[in-house]
Image (cartoon, rainbow, N blue to C red):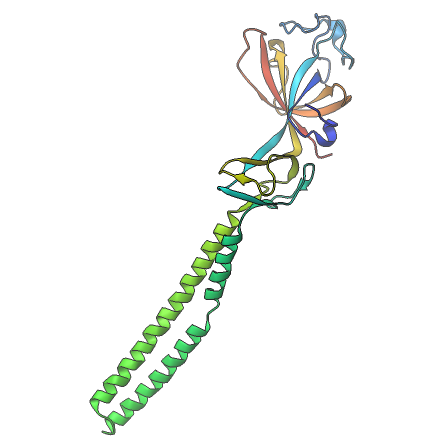
Length: 288
């Protein structure tokens, strides 16, 4: 695949010709036939940094270079792609809305739920009725003690006060339920958005606005280029001679033509029986 300068902006999984430049006195062996990945300790006179250009006495290894985080974002549900907010090559920020499925019905549901949740005047009216009926019952109690009203009238006033309190409780529950419904509708609306899970670059867009998509159909691919991952298959000779956690120089082929500092993060303990090699995994800090 085509790629740009590694230290700046590798955009996809890329095969590079790489030399491992081992610190101190050791490096990948010279004086071995080109392409020979057999087990052999480099002769003393070859323990130096190898020249960049491949020669008959140096080994050039194909290294798989890729971003550590690459993801293809898919349609969250069946529907029509309504918006695309970026083009290929644009940089996205974590959490940014990259694309939107048709969300017009969901928006309408949110607006309706907002209107219902704002109907606080129902609660205010119920509170007023509670205050009025409670005061009225208190007056009827005083009047009953003075034999000014009948027991039936007192009971009716008490019942009205209780009913007002029940209506207030119902109004408050209605508002609480409306707010929960609003949260639910807002979540359904949010489900139409395709957001960036991390900051990175949009490298490929697979869908078009207005296109009907099924759930899980790919929409776009985004990669995080801040850290790159490199795999090298080295002769078994190098097992134990390279230390996980240490930094080493990788010299990349054209068009990079540069030495790249990488950290060894893992060594696969399995040995390839055909090539007698092991897989060494490096990471490259690509932020500078």
